Amino acid sequence: MFRCKSAAELLEEAEKQQIHLPFQEDVSLLATQVFINGREIPNRIAIQPMEGCDGTADGKPAELTLRRYDKFARSGAGLIWAEATAVWEEGRANPRQLWIREENLDAFRAMNDRIREISMKENGFVPLIFMQATHSGRYSKPEGVPAPLIAYNNPLFEKDSPIPAERIVTDDYLHRLVERMGEAAKLAEKAGFDGVDIKSCHRYLGSELLSAYTRPGNFGGSFENRTRFLRESIAGAKAAVSSNFIVTSRLNIYDGFPYPYGFGVNEKDGLIPDMTEPKKLIGILHKELGVDLLDITIGNPYVNPHVNRPADTQPYALPEEPLTGVARMLDCTRQIQAAYPDLTVIGSGLSYLRQFAPGVAAGAIREGYFQIAGFGRMAFAYPEFAKDILSGKGLDPKQCCITCGKCSQLMRFGSKAGCVVRDSVYTRLYQEATAK
Image 1 (cartoon, one colour):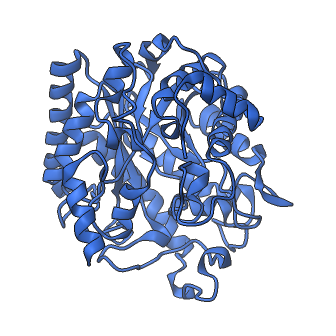
Image 2: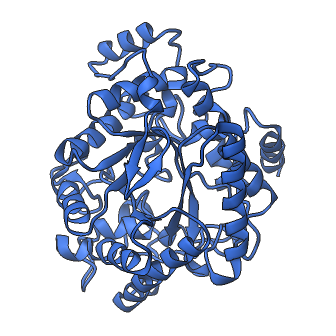
């Protein structure tokens, strides 16, 4: 259980665990600007993509979607990285996942206009807004029941119930999906987003391909083939949009699964990160394809959530102390930022630290771990967290995310996701889901 009452206690606990947490009391660094492609991000706080599973059946933002983004607009964050938005219906993670297509552009445009209007009124600035373009791959549930589309069979996940071979997507399918990612980027720009994320994290299809060592053909085996989908999708997206529209990715650089089923892992021990291939890939994205911003993450929220969502409890016995997970996330991100100092890197995994997260975020920026601090679960629990950080007020422990995981449980239940502890709307939805 997280019991630290002061920063000193937190740092003492980290020292006991032989973990270095960058920390500084002065968090004013978080209020400074960042520029990408000539576009200003007003401060160094980003809201990470957190799916609400609450759109309409045809993929438009619905009432709870708009309610959530209204809160994000008021938050004070300089970058709002909007949630996973499907590019094809069959790649939706649930029947209410947002879906980018021509018929939905007016609804997305209205949502983005609303975010900017609220933020300008409340905060005096307009944040940048990105869309996360996704294909859910093995986690696809467009009708509410599993309908996986996979890059390859993975016995670690499938165990004694392998997914039928006909559900392995073909090379032709992936070539068409590359084209669709370019089309989705163009639609995102038309819908008023400032940038698009070609999602490649958390074992959705784009991420899974990075570890497709056992897959034959143009998208498996070699480093060149395994990275082909991401490289070509980013190139296609950049060709489809204007020069100041930002093309980026939320990228898994470490999966935490043994070789040959994990990307960014030591071939002899999959629990040990190996940044050789991630650094090589990022070098290509940055130096050759002109990607100047990357959102770094690790792990899989479905299988090893302790890796990317450190918490005091998980759906299984904890294999490590939560601070170990925080430190791993920080160190993996630090290695990327150190390799490419002129790349703007967004860090993750801070919410577990509660009211001490701003101090660690500021310390991490000062020490070169990343340049922007990303917050996911915290934004669900504490909508005005960024405003309280930037004002100097600091975070109220009674409003912070307690990393209980119930927002994720709501998703697993097939319900709509939000903070069960801090928001009565989701308290009721959780009660209804658990009563069934």
